[in-house]
Image (cartoon, rainbow, N blue to C red; front, top):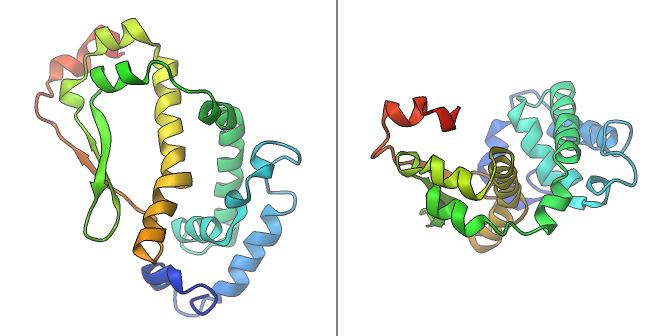
Length: 190
């Protein structure tokens, strides 16, 4: 696996001793290009990255190189993308984004010294009543889903290209300043 793609770096350290990573990757690849892959003709079926080697390795790592569990997780991911209509979410802009960012302070802010994107969220400064005046809870969730998918589709690949090795993690900072029990128990937060 390492000779085939020198960009895997530290991910190769996750391969347990005695495991043939090439064989396991090939088993997963065959399954997701068959019955366990995205529904034929769906928007997900047209996205090569969903079945690229890097994505398959990510899911193998997440399931300790267990093929069955990795395929089950990938199939679930494909279903979730279809159920959330991710393709449409990413094509349809969020006109309320400026308000979401104003009343729900969070953003990406550069990279750390390992090339990972830095995400900062400030839940103590969420203004839930005002946020819900400009959008709905469902739309906020859709926005979060879309941002998470953009992380996988754009931010991490861009960081990998700049770094010259796979960057598949980010640094998430939760600044809890201003967070109080009142915010969590507020009726609009429920």
